Amino acid sequence: MNDQLLDYVLDQLEPPAKHQVEARIEADPEARRKVELLRQALAPLAADQEIEPPPHLAARTVARVAEHVCHELPHAPAPGRGETLGRPWWRRADVLVAASLLGIFVGLGLPLLMRLRSPGSAAALVECQNNLRIFHQALKTYEDQHKELPSLPPPPHNLAGVIVPLMMDAGTLPATFSVQCPGNGPFLTCAHTFEQLKNMTADQFTQAAPNLLQSYAFTLGYRDEAGVWHSISRLDDLGDNAVLIFADNPPPTVAFGNSTNHGGRGQNVLFLDGHVQFLTLRTLAGDDIYLNRANVVAAGLDNRDVCLGASASKP
Image (tube, rainbow, N blue to C red):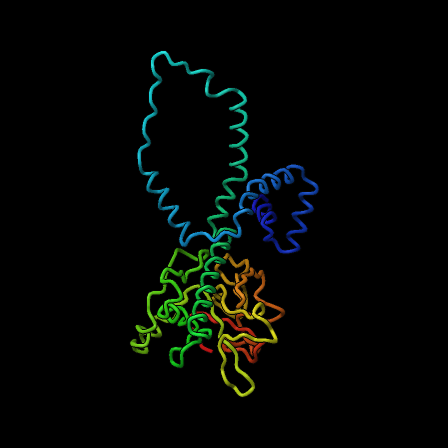
């Protein structure tokens, strides 16, 4: 039940589960107490939610902590002669407070810590969203420099994953950009430049293709009535806030299910205007984001038909 309470506070529950938890909270004073404790513990995070963390902050913090954990702490100095120690360090009230905090930590803290380390955790979701925002910033920088949005290259290199080395070679996407979603594994960068890809044999390119975008998906664009393919574009009749361009990877069996990046609970998606949204279902306005209206992984059938493809997908 503690896991459900945490999901409830983070607003990550589906409506039926949310109603069930709310009924439990209404009837159980202990559940209400735990919800209040969780809200108090998470409240300070709200003040920082608009602040962009430095790149790879989590990894660098863990490394820093590990470095100092291995060092032996200095011994406390012995009291000098004539010094009085004053009252004992631990009074009965101190013991009671410490015992209460320990009880709260064991009851809530450990499950919370385990959840924060899990693929479906709120921390992994936030890190993934920040990664998508980095991609969007690189996209806008590319547009500022080239007066147009980037497009996939001609065949045979017109794969969704090629967008990353293409933008890296253009100098707009940092080489430190992680093509691995934080909810799906450790930090991982793209191993190839676009120039390297062009010089590969067909077999080498086929082998490299799935790893270029690793655990993300990029738009496959759409074809107009004449069959002409179009990549990302500003669509006046839709608006930038409706153009979906980037997201968590589709599931291994593309025909059904959510991305596995966040434990199957849903997928982060990035829109052309830069806003990021977490979808608990793989549909947007009734449209499957991983299949076009013909139920295949290919370019959309018109400018309203979204299809995001994994790294090795072609329009």
